[in-house]
Amino acid sequence: MFDLQDKVALITGGSRGIGRAIAIRLAKQGADVVVNYVRHKKDARDTADAVEKYGRKCLLVKANVANSDDVQRMFAVIEEEYGHLDILVSNAASGVLKPALELTERHWDWAMDINARALLTLVQSAFPLMKSGSRVIAVSSLGSVRAIENYTTVGASKAALESLVRHLAVELGPKHINVNTISAGAVDTDALKHFPNRDEILSTALARTPLGRLTTPEDVADIALFLCSELSAMIQGQVITVDGGYAIRG
Image (cartoon, rainbow, N blue to C red):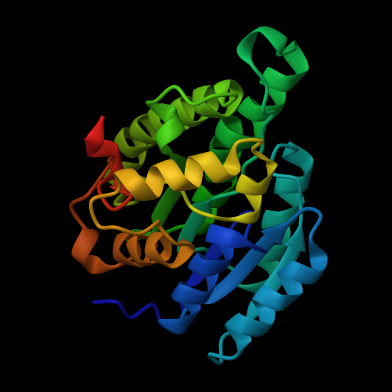
């Protein structure tokens, strides 16, 4: 059920954190991996080394997913190298951490382009390379449904992302392509280091998580693997939350 032998998976923002964990998890089950990155080339190379330890091929592609030309060039490379794509994981994310009243139009557009619109561009480019049984997974966060300090642009863009997933699920369902979202709780990744109240976020999450520990990138990767497997064949357009129960505490 979890055999991904010879499938090809693209993970955007795959050089670190959750993206890296997903890349390694899928490779462990037999998938060849395309790791997309923008700035962190050394981290991307480290991820590729980890993937290749499982005997799988890892292609590194530098591209800004908010730039349509970059996305087109990335898929041209994928098509030339593999000729098909079975799994698309839209994980790359960014945003400006400021109070809502301090945000500019540029801040808003930046977050929306990378966190939401990019999924549409990626799917439009990936669709010609996909066949029945392919999977699209978007990575979101609890900020899509909760008000988190300084998280306005990211939270709003993640809400848009989850809405887009539902619409894509309806359109791609008849093609037998599954489209779903993973919403992660507080995960201690490099991205969280940009939050001025990082320590407070982590300590609060830990105290309020019924399972008694923070969510790890590997926890998220396990759900990604499930969504890539035949066990998830009838899951479509859903948001699966992996947070150890944190969100149910209100």
